[in-house]
Length: 601
Image (cartoon, rainbow, N blue to C red; front, side):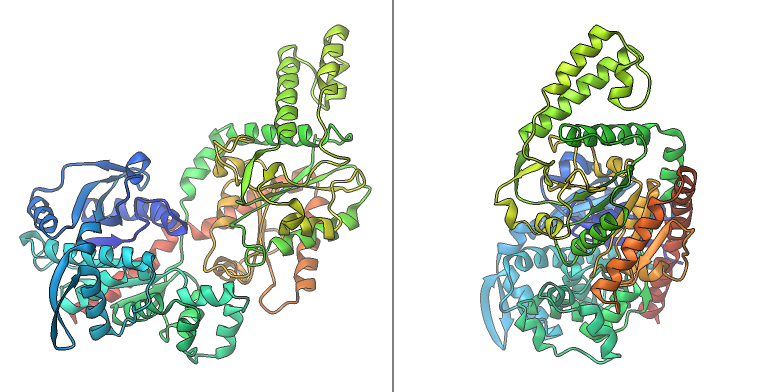
């Protein structure tokens, strides 16, 4: 049984990427189990104080430890991670420590140099971590990680930790120097290292090679390690290799990354620690909160303001599908999504019920197009007036028939002031800081016959600013936004795990992913057509076959009755409970027990 848990990550208490989300949700479960015996260690930046970190009085025996660390140039800030279940956290600032001049022995000679170079020399001589050509990001984070090791060593020397079973859990190569420090100093803790995706594997994929396919084809053999130098990630890669090798328990987040680790790092993970999600919160919220209905209404109002200046559509029962990801056109499967939409459009052309496809990502934008903002505001005012006079439900045309003729005339005049941008509704609702014809998403839409013409049943809205309360248009959080669509599609080609399908299902979306994601491979043998969850074959299938399969699934959902659609959404939510943290946390605890046994054996 573990007595105390340190969890070390540069994303603990500091929102950067996906690991932040994992740790944030995981902390709720772990904190309940360990209480004050759970302590996160994060990377301090001033912005973390804005919303995530709240100062608190440190335990009495930590005060002298922090003072000693301060003498070395390592500033420790103790407090609570507000969004991480108020778990105890220490945010470390090692910037002064990094630049401090020290004298040390290197290759038999005394050298006076910056602390960062002493750390690099130590890791090369002891662990063959080749950081000769490391970048600034590496040089900034390695001293921080090394400092976390020093801090844990100091804390472990306190009387109350004597004889205790303690775990130090390090996430990603960024924290690896801390693990190597503890190994070198023989600090009595169980050392766990988790990689969420290998640095070299991601680099290979970004260069256009299929890392996952290569790894499966390798059948246990190791990649040529010179590849790391070729891609300029030698320092990060060799630190990752050493961290995996010298951990008491090495874990990763999915079967796909496990195969990748064996191929890239030369070590198979001891445990696959699948990421979880907290469904209790969403189950309560979905049953009691009216926000989803409001978001759906707002979304349809936005779409009506977007298309109604050009032609008539029905907005009473459309199918709304969405994709949301970083703007990696191939990696995140935007090309698969758009091609499948083109096929769907050709199959259902002429149908009166529209399909609205929202494409969310982040690009270089100036702001929403003025005409779209104006039309949205006009329609919002129209809706406000109609609701104020208790107009009947339905389209605006239908609602106008049930109110005073003079007022109806005023509203018609407002509607006539709608502004048009071109012949058809634009694909992008934001102004891009580059020519639209150069945008991959817009170009793909046009090539696939998705031009928002009156004949197109599938209507596309490219939202290149993601969605946030300050985006100037929909102005809501991403989680709130997910309450509006019917289907979330996430056909990534390279995704170590991928929680986006889970997040969508948690907000009652039918969810579609691919068998090239860690999550997709985990659930692919656990779902069927009634699950509300579909895994598209992409690992061995051709592009044409993958897009056909996705188009088939979207058409199947399109043809469901409203009652069937509602049931499938509910099924998706219930199916996703298989990744609730109450179930997934056991894999982490398995790794912790393994590390304790090895470190004390």
